[in-house]
Image (tube, rainbow, N blue to C red):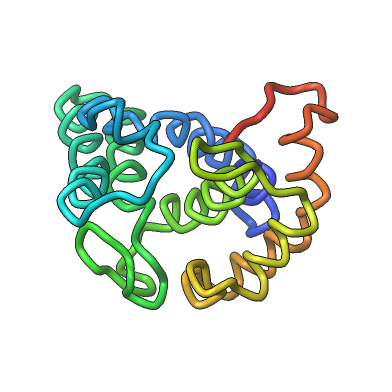
Length: 177
């Protein structure tokens, strides 16, 4: 999905693939979060939510020390994939172009994947509902969370995103990649 989106934004095929490969590690910081919080079916307390919100920094801390350029890209994506274009994200409240492009690309794909996936606290949503939430918002997810040109590009490739998620593209499924 990320490679499709990157290419639709004019990112080269090779760089789009690098971003997609690096983004596979975007949630590695969840290893630092107690599993019972990730699997909890009831609302999280403020303290529990703070632990979950620490996973981008934990992921960055895991990945940035390798000295490898691919891991540096993965660390950047891990750190910033929950930043929002309107500045309402975390961990640093970055906005707009201050968020690295690879993280802005990964963010919309991550939200799509999260909406489609079954969670302990809710069933996965279908393609139409997930796209409606991303494009129109639902109170929790808003279109202002995403760079407008990336949002429009994602809408253009949404059928490809559906195919990737549902495994109709011959690739792995489901996938943020």
